[in-house]
Image (cartoon, protein in one colour):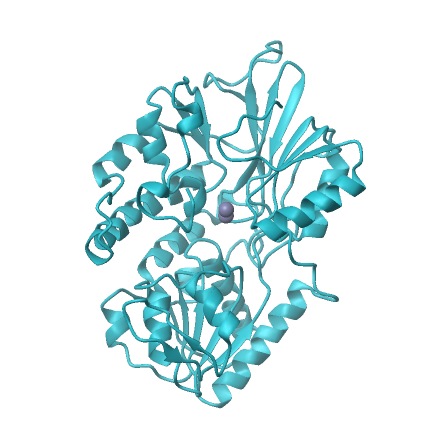
Length: 427
Ligand SMILES: [Zn+2]
Ligand SMILES: [Zn+2]
């Protein structure tokens, strides 16, 4: 689904495939933009088989049920009458049709484990994408030809997630994300040094008795930040401090904890809900909780969409120079988080269109803990698998453009394609 569009404009553009039989839908991971309108797709294509990893299925079901609640509220708040796009009951019925698949196993689209001799059968295989819990890239094979879709990928270790393990053999067609295509990897950046910089910034903020808001995605970034905070405490870089997260984030964190033994990850025994021991806020308590120094609020949404916990909380602290907002990942430039970042201290921002704009007096800092691959590592991957065709997806225009130009000059034998939605591409 389109993360910035609402209502009936949010689901994918199904027009071009409306009159076709769809045999299967493969889900790479459970972020909103990848699974958020799956029930709509399933309604359109009732004969399609649905495949994803077990972790994606578990997270996805929680996320979709939460979406119904959010959409019901938005129907009231923004008058979006097409909401909810689906119901709790429909998700329950739909998720019974999801088929959970392990990583690194060739499975035929017909739903069976592929026999070796069946060379002509269309098969897929999931590869660990190192992006969030359960995330995958996927390889399609048929008639000796291969298509590989990266999904959202990270080729570097994060604090919890380990780097992607992707195929290295030659691939015929590569469909590649390019989220970070418009940013060069900063000189000398390492995750470890960035973690240290965050710990120091937290210590400085605590010295002036600040409270900290870290806006994050509920899935992935929340758990990565909790793991970092846990490490800071364990290394005694910081004194004890209370952490707050939202209800949805706590459900995803529970799933991370339950799946420690089945996930390739760092800190394999760390149970975040027990060790980081966050307090849980909801829509009511976030308004009633006193803003006190020395507390860390790790709240979604990451883009600070109006009425979400991070937006409501930011509105409460933004005019107070004592407090801090730390950005730790990607925010679309047009999102409230993007606007706040752009305006900076001293600027003015309207985080909620229903409320008057506010002067930004709080301290604002930025850190780089993206869950997406650097553009340099994406180029390296493309070189390794030397595809005949490369399709660029999942990037803002400048990101896609940089990738297109760079790949065209560095892989002169590959055809680089920026697909137009709704227009068929010959693979
Ligand atoms: Zn993602
Ligand atoms: Zn995505």
